[in-house]
Amino acid sequence: MKRLIKNGLVYYQGKFSQQDILIVGKRISEIAPSINKPADMVTDATGRHVFPGFIDMHVHLRDPGQTHKEDIVTGSRAAARGGFTTICCMPNTEPVVDNAATVEYIKRKANDLGSCKVMVIGALTKKSEGKQIAETAAMIKAGIVAVSDDGHCVQNAKLKLNAMKYVSSFGLAVITHAEDYNLAGKGQINAGKVSTMLGLSGMPSLAEDIIVARDILLAKSAKCRLHLAHTSTALSLQMVRVAKEQGLRVTCEVTPHHLLLTEDACIGFDTNTKVKPPLRTESDRQACITALKDGTIDFIATDHAPHSDFEKEHEFTLAPYGINGLETAFISLFDRLVLSEIIPLEFLIEKMAVKPAEFLGLNRGVIEPGKEADIVIADLTKSTKIDTDNLLSKSKNTPFLGETFRGTICETIADGKTTWKAAPCDNNAG
Ligand code: DOR
Ligand code: ZN
Image 1: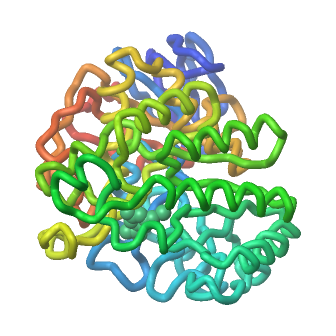
Image 2: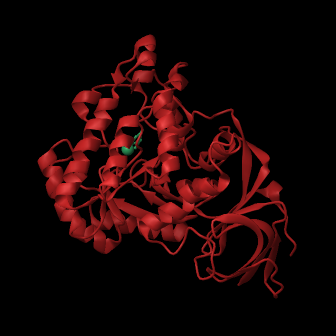
């Protein structure tokens, strides 16, 4: 199958220019200002932006075991709708992904029924209980790309050190969800003026900072690659900055919600703002933006954490933590950070596609001849309203419900195949 995408404004070699793209089978075969070759399908992308498919390092697919919240089919469909062509799923399922059979189950189901490439992150410890190291070698054979106890945090420094030493022997990164349980306590939101005002118990920044400091030191000692999930405080970012300056192999990510929202979003007791780590202060949010711009933060990851209505429609203290993110990530960041000129569009693409592809060592994330044909066609003049009726995820727990963002993902192509198409964007020439 040959497919030609013509006249789009293509993110190519780090900037936007008008290019035609020829896809042959699963790969990009040619890029040039004008390609006039026969093709089975020609798409006129005039007036559209064309990006490499986005890559999300941090997704909760809830499959196996919590498929009332999401499953591999709905989660990967939501990903495709958001412009993602590759996602990595976290192991806090039921059972936990701490063994080869569960890794194989996810990979097989995603391969047979999924709408994007799904890479699996295995648990660091058995059942993510922080007591015994999981069977990393067997999971690596089954194809995991990193290890993490995300959603949980190993409290025992000695065990974490041993786990890092073991994992580093395979060259994999350990991904840390930084939360000191004693300091976090039963904190519902960030500890600060809003928690005091609302009478909710608070989770202090210190609960994150102390684990970030500890794990940087442990990773240095273990000579292990450390990736910090959803960094959210000014101080943890400062520590990452220093670690990088010292040449340590430390990387980190930020979520769209920590870039766009603060603890003030919790004032209305909307349980869709309840998340770990919590939405922080405006100065933390600004620190996230600064760290994203100066390269301290390597890339953006959604931490897509779907929860059903019946779980979120509770008193704030009883609702689970988590924000649904795949379908809102790009358009919310485009609308709020690019249109307001805080970051350029090229930079957003770099942080959502190029950098995560580099982190994972994939032959994706850029539009170049020879790369896998993972391509997003977007209309950045057309707005998208976020409401419960049009989200493809099984869960609707986004704090952006009711908001309208500029930007619509018209089509997502993964490995040369269409995985999402928005009907009103139709612009086909044959
Ligand atoms: O808010 C969160 N929800 N943070 C996490 O780290 C885990 C996630 C979940 O699995 O629901
Ligand atoms: Zn987490």
